[in-house]
Length: 77
Picture 1 (tube, rainbow, N blue to C red):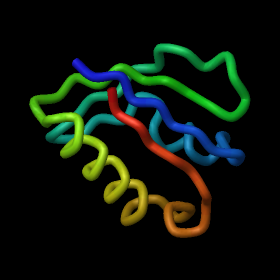
Picture 2: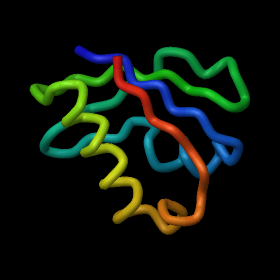
Picture 3: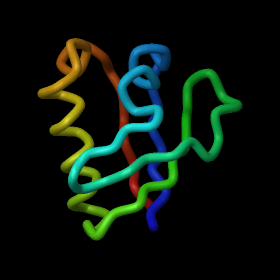
Picture 4: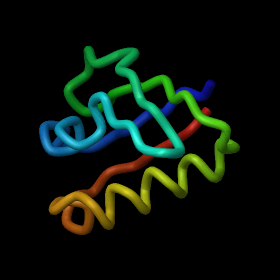
């Protein structure tokens, strides 16, 4: 299990995509959403931290209409 921290200013769009996100490689669950510019998820996955970070960035960029226009960071711990 990993913790995924996502930081950004347009969290409404980021959360709309990642809240309760699940695919064949990962399942995300909200852990901490108290901040307006940061959210922390727990991730159930077999991927390494580096692979999970790449997968989430690629998935958001390619499957979200906002993936290429929003500034955000994803850190996996």
